[in-house]
Image 1: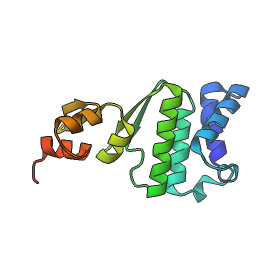
Image 2: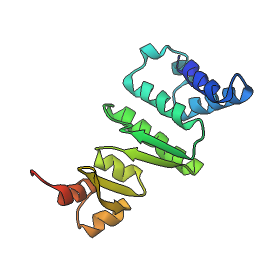
Image 3: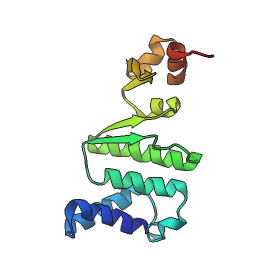
Image 4: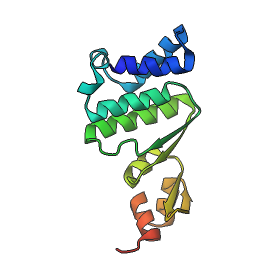
Length: 153
């Protein structure tokens, strides 16, 4: 089940202790899934539900630095929205740095305080998204990237 998955990973960090149970409960809350859903088999979960448990599992440990690769890739609109909401609330409430890689520039613009845009393995520009948009006089971060790396357009 989703709950067993969260508890298993909490036990990897804290053993069979009350702390592991407490951390798994934090993970359950972070996931935003209902108790009913958390007690269902993961094999019955949608891709979005699986991703929510996976991200909750990562965040529940309480690391000050979290690295995520394409956290919403392949998800439907509702699941992607839920993941973004989880990440925003968690980073805001826990003073944690989240390093995020994504090809979705609009999502990056929404989630990130500071970005580094990379093309062909090199950072081509970095800074707060709003500053970059203003500097390059474009509508969004995607257009910043295209204006700097826009080969083949």
